[in-house]
Length: 148
Image 1 (spheres, helix red, strand yellow):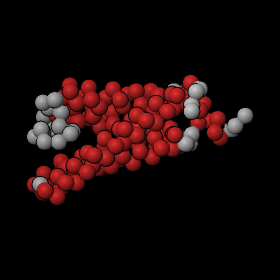
Image 2 (tube, helix red, strand yellow):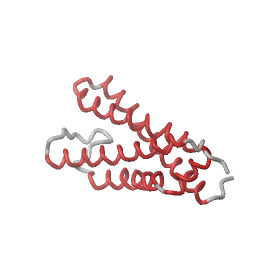
Image 3 (cartoon, one colour):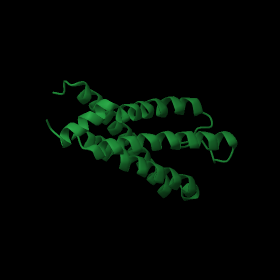
Image 4 (cartoon, helix red, strand yellow):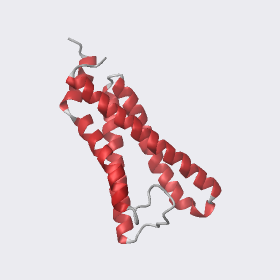
């Protein structure tokens, strides 16, 4: 059982990264289904699928490796949560300016539920990022490389 502050902080970051990775994995599966069932919507679904694949490939291994105290896991958590923030904010800006196709049919559509989507995606991504970049998590990972 982890009792140190560093361990608890790292565990929280890893669990949030894993949960986020699973959420984006579900989104990736839905995007693949959309690509197969609705070929006319392939452009939007493909963009969503690529973004979700990048997020899954950063967050799931990042969270897993962070649980194993591997510094690369910390980098994966930072990269994944940063990318989630960037993708969500980019989608919101594109929707607000009318440059994005919005049909309310997918998890990335922010026009009608922009604030709700921001409320669901941004807080966990920000918390994961803050925890992953924190000193306690860095020390926890460093302790594995250089045990005292």
